[in-house]
Length: 76
Image (cartoon, rainbow, N blue to C red; front, side, top):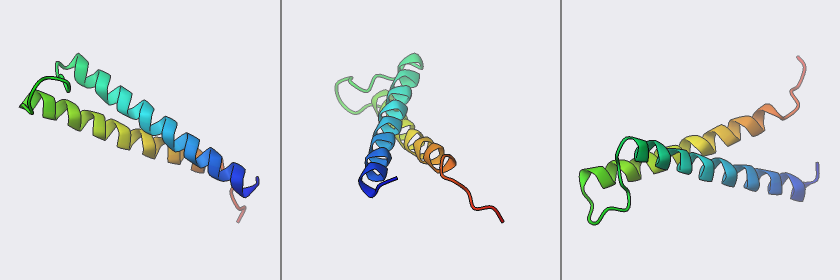
């Protein structure tokens, strides 16, 4: 795979993983009753924001693990 194509694949998979994870975190928070868009920074809003951040991080790590699993392995 060419360098440009590899970098494009890396960037796109990271972006999809991060955004997908952040959306999953948002919807989990929404189902639990946390509103990230409420006025002020109350406990409910902060918990929702934390879930979005954690979801984005987990999604990014999942995308990187998926990408690593697709690499050819050396046979020892």
